[in-house]
Image (cartoon, rainbow, N blue to C red):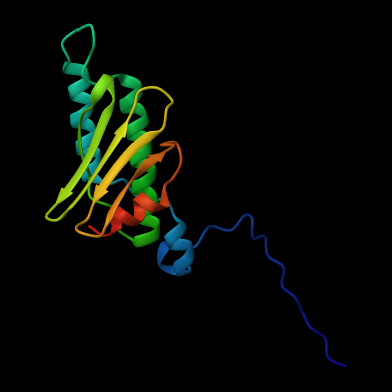
Length: 154
């Protein structure tokens, strides 16, 4: 009769393996760094809000920029995890009624998302040529896989 010896380890006290020793699926799940291009564009939008002249109706309302920033960071992180790259950063500009417009444009391709300051849904319109157009609305607090997929084509 043979006996089997089991070695029990204190796995909860051991150090985590280095990134080189981790399985690929664990490395992919690690928190992604932030996108420098997106960070720069959001900082430019923050400066726009800070520099606004005290008007009765500012160009961008703080809640709209906060919602747009949170949405962009989630989309960027999800795209990085799914496609191993950040999506292109949009051009951020004032929209109607204090909202924020997020605009991506490339030759033959464009996407415009409007994020309002209140809790109403964001709206979007995308044009990718003759047979490829999308439009609709969504909750910007969620991750929209359709938009991630659309941005991954850029």
